[in-house]
Image 1: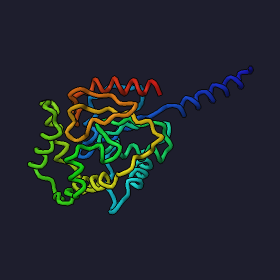
Image 2: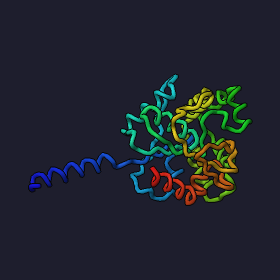
Image 3: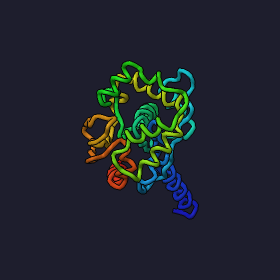
Image 4: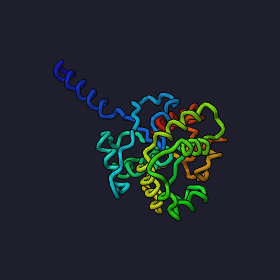
Length: 237
């Protein structure tokens, strides 16, 4: 093969390599932001934190997911990690793009995966009574509820909850209330769930990883353990 042919072959190989480079997108939950993932390790891929977009009036989950895809240029070859409600968005994105799998942390498939008291609150749409403005006592209460007794995470939880968009939060709860059917039966859903989660039931599927004593904010409180699980999933895919 001549020098031109070798150069051409090298360029084609480099093009294939570039196309195969995956990005890993992290989508936080209600009231959370990218700080929830800050203690996770390196998974050998570019890590991109998805920031919440303001919802439009009467917007569907499908439309919202599509806007995130367009904003962040997500492709079907990328990796999605969704925390809590972010996991529901991740599942919708995965279906829209034809992805094979999605990684869920402290997340759910339908509202039936929530603990009964929260399902009941959604049934009667108590979230509609939430104020449009946030108040310190609300942040304190929510942070205490999410926290599983870890002093290191409580200040971060309080700060995130204090800065959450109440309009977006109420919209998100409306979308959870509407979620009666599982999104994407064909999707492989890697389910990382805590045994002490006050929001989620400890639901299981064929790809479940249980974190002992893990609460709803275990992505921060048990970051090392969760990092090992994600690394294993990424390596296998």
